[in-house]
Image 1 (cartoon, rainbow, N blue to C red):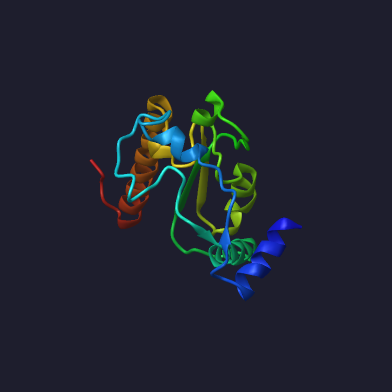
Image 2: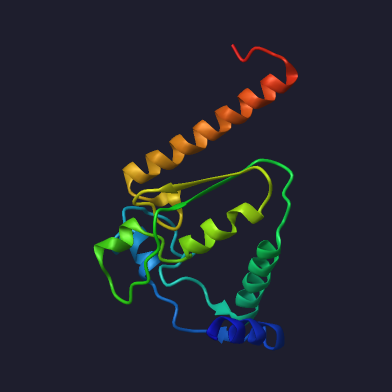
Length: 164
């Protein structure tokens, strides 16, 4: 019931600030906390930016649109963490799961993106896979490289050229 209520609030009061978002994801990234990345905290604060009801409403509407089907005409690669986690306090598992999005939703909705959707889970991946720990990051880039090579082979085959 919370999600539809927040989505409705986003329609009638888009500038209403939402509180209570966890700083755990930001803490898991930045080296001043529990992460290994150094970046400008003015651009990406550990606690995130103020979230407003309109933002939540827009996300809810976009998810409804995906659920209806998008029919994206080009190939789509969907990489996601192997699992989601909803921690209320710090645990080392935060470094090995998506604590922002629901992986099960991604898997369920992926086929509705289009006819050419390839989906892969990345073990120990986090929300932003390229910021994951080294093994998960390497797997992310390997999957991306393999997908791009497959697209190139298909393109060359369709043209009748030797990718040689």
